[in-house]
Length: 177
Image 1 (cartoon, rainbow, N blue to C red):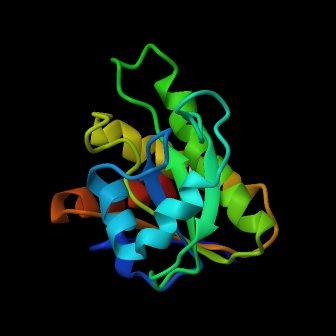
Image 2: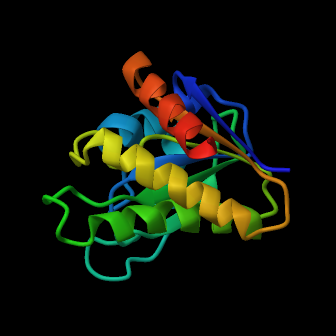
Image 3: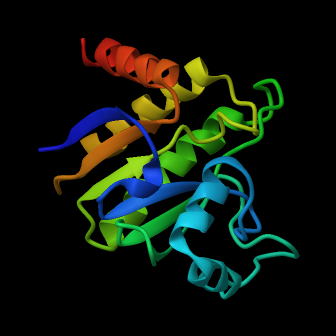
């Protein structure tokens, strides 16, 4: 019914219903995955993000939350912008916020009747979340969220390096045992 797979590559090239963008709270582009998504989707994405109202000055999407926009020039029909936590040592609620990103992204995909979604390693780049911990948390939360729904959904975990892909696949296999 549900499937979870791992690929190494460029998330902006995947032909899925939605890709998840590791966004910042402003949602107006940045570095890493966020910058790549904005460049690949084109200028219309910036305008769509700008049109999302701020919930407080400079914040369109608070940490742990998600927003959705069209995919514009991407093969994916939609972009789900998820704002992961900045790693502050693990004692500042980072795990709960990271879990929230994955859970809310899947819930948002389901609300839009999407059946395939691709996730990057949220918060593992410039936000400094230790990859092994982030991978464990993400797979646990994805499996938990999928286990609570009855509509089939295909999840792809997308790694930017061979090492990260191997770590994702190893953790996925460990949790499947």
